[in-house]
Image (cartoon, rainbow, N blue to C red; front, side, top):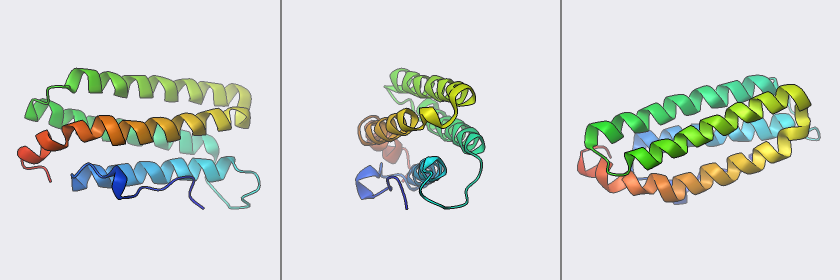
Length: 137
């Protein structure tokens, strides 16, 4: 069962980015299932999922930031700083997980759900017009 799922309300109007966001939602749901001791589902080790999530987000942020630069997105600095904040938080959670194990799971999942949802629905939608006007649909 998915922790939370991508739906049309998360669309930024760019197929490439929407596809990447869907993948992120899937990774977060995988982490949720791995942390849920009652799920009974076989999953990858939690640390591997956290590493996959961090790597995929780096890839995704690089995609967005490439287009910020290419298209001259006016809010690229503040948006990129939000990406850096997220990267720092994931690094903190990775370290906390190594130290405390599943104990940090609930805090990590709450952060991921809130941040990803809020970031996509508010901040990412700010670049839709810019990206679309430059041919990225």
